[in-house]
Length: 206
Length: 206
DNA sequence: CGTTATTTCAAACGCTTGTTTAAACTGTCA
DNA sequence: TGACAGTTTAAACAAGCGTTTGAAATAACG
Image 1 (tube, chains in turn brown, orange, cyan, green):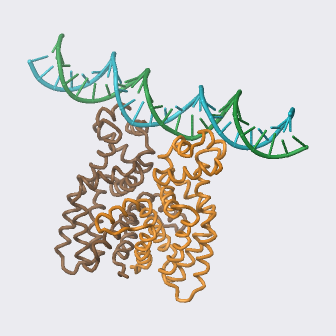
Image 2 (cartoon, rainbow over the protein chains, first blue to last red):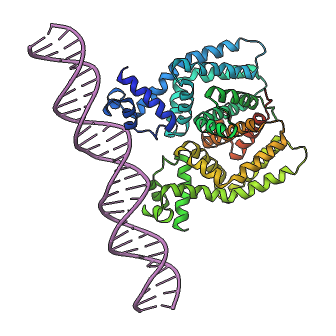
């Protein structure tokens, strides 16, 4: 395995657990068993390393996501639950792409919204605008009465729910294990959260 | 104003915007216009300062919150929307206690879940257990079919929605202003989010 | 007043951070 | 073989961090 990939893998796992600010280059290079200077040699800076870690997932995910959403849009009598499921399916497929892929990616996404003053949010929305556009289109088809403004709010609430849940999923799964003696994985958590957000978006207008 | 309070105010605002790890003591003391060593003199350490910032709010909020929840529990035919409204009212009252109180507190709460490897979560749940207990009781009365485990998950989803929304409320309100020409304040955002989370918690069991 | 106790202050401490340097090593091709 | 590009390495860099120090300033009290 190349030095570059060793760094990407180590960085990804540490970033997911400890956040971007909370992970030092020395931790990364020591876990990757490469020299400290290798990060700056191969990526230029820590910030660029973060972008590379995210891009590796987004380049894999973005086409699948758009395809899945476009596909579901052709369906008649579309429900919100189906829309969200269409969104989730490519996410879960990241586990085939990489071990713990789904979990890592969603946790990284969550970190990106709280760490590093939102530069990751800018990066994702400007680099991958097709995803959100197709998602909005699908929701609009499933729930046409929803005004654009109301949808704006509810989709951001949904984003928040997912992102927050994933970034603290380890802690939540631990509590669930000790309180209810139920072992849970990321897919299980997602199964719990989908009905929640679907119902939220589908909430009746006042 | 005392040095201690100057530090608390400066720390609170900076923590809310930049997170705990992202804010240095030098930033805090320079904005508070006090000496750097004052933090360690008055609070002992940065960690204790964080606790103090949170305690100032929790000591104000916790009794009001419990009273409001106990009060609503006496009602017949309780709905989830009423339960959440009972929770929100004391939160909004923090604005009378302190300028930007509601917004700051909720943002800090959000930071506490992602920054500093969750020690704040431990702090809050062990120091203020009454709040969550009463809330669970109220939800249970409004929606008795919900199992304890399902409620655990949905309440954490709700927490995530609120916390994420509040921590990015400034950005969201800006977008709403430019896209829909609608000026929004924190109370307005909360009015939007309440039906969403109420519907989420009330989602039918599969 | 003088004597404590409390609070402030500038300066330094030891440590960690991301980044850079220049030398050493590796493989490739003439 | 010798030369050259690509890569790795140990060491150092400057800057920032939380914390500690001991003396100066201030407040409180008999």
